[in-house]
Image (cartoon, rainbow, N blue to C red; front, side, top):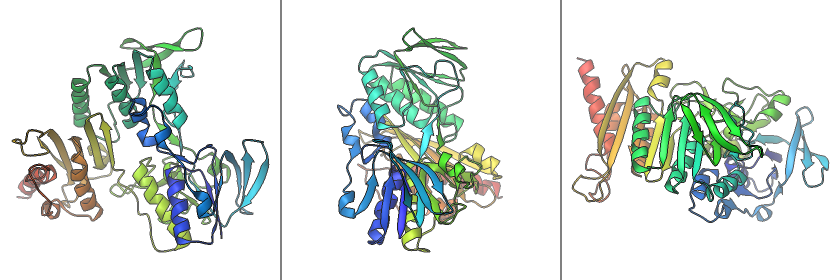
Amino acid sequence: MKVVYIGHGSSGWTSATTLRAWDRTAEITIIDKKNYDAYHPCAMPYAIGGLWEDESPLIESLNYDMMKINFLRRHEALKIDRQNKKVSVKNLENDEVFEVEYDYLVICIGSKAKLPPIPGADGKNVYALKWIEDSAKIREAAAKASKAVILGASAIGLEVATELAHRGIETAVLARSRLMRLLIDPDYANETVKLLEEKLPKLKFVIGVGINEIVLDENGMATKITTDQGDFECDFVVAATGIKPEVTLAQEAGLKIGESGAIVTDEELKTSDPSILAVGDCAETTHLISKKPINSAIATCCVRMARVAAMTIAKPGTLTFPGTMNNFIVPYIDLRVGSVGLIKKAAEDAGFEVVSAKIKTHNKPPYMPDAEELYFKILADKNTGKILGAQAIGPDSITDNLNVISLGMQNEMTFLELLQSDLCYAPAVNETIYPVTQALEMISRKMLRRQK
């Protein structure tokens, strides 16, 4: 059996190695434009912040020779011939073009950064953070900068902003809308702004701003941003205005593209052509709660999809991928912000009648000297009592609390069922009554009062 992968990010890496573990005889070929094996994009903000001298710790070499996987580095897939089950490939070192046959093709080519449609976005010191090379450029610019501007308030854009401010660089975040508007509710977005500005004096948020132009000097270097709320000088700019799925090859091959702009897949990750699968940033799946199409660029979703795709090929019927809740957790220096499931607007748009409860508490008993404040919110459906989503701001322990909610939601538990969860406790580790349990108690009071 011949299996060909186009792309080699987290999805391609996970799927190819999983397939090899289950099928020792398949002929596996990977086509990828990079000149190195793999890298860890989620850790690039830490490199920019100076955690390492360079990005080398984020680059990983894989022993594909031992696994007998044919890895075509510095190669580009040019065309998919579905009728003859062939991929046209170009060697980027010598421009040689040849064809690779497949029985199964897995498209895991990822996504691409979107630059803002404003004058000056092509400036030499205007960067988008997508590849390891981008991280190196931003880190090198930061080493000699005193002022930076971040365009957009995406999760990774805020990570870069906080890392730069932590380094002592005056950093302005300019955003037309609120922080992470698809991931957290407005009240928690506002709370995040407040907490981050308190923690990082060099960080400034300008929300609801209209950006006019990135002003370039005679050398094509950005020197300031003009907006409807004044001008912002800068030594460099990071455009964190989103990504979009890379679907060019799929479109040209006639594969179905969905509402989200990504490649439509079923529960086996098969596309509209059953011999072609798609996983990761370029694939569309279903939101587990809203049941609507979603293109998730979250790494954990990507690797879960990749595992299922491998099993679809090696052990059909063993695993399926019903969808994702798009769970995320993101660190901003010593503050974590996370979300599982739906935010309030998305839940209402999906037709749910939302009841919410939020608390402000601590991660440990307040008498512990290292206790920290923690914010937690839960959304539930008034009619069924099922949990729709949760959000949290605080220290590392918010991850554990959000994971409790996530597992409960995946098992369609109600707030009362989840309230009975049996959890671990020690004063040095957590509160006697977990924050998630405190929030569940509050939502139970609201829900049960409404039922009288």
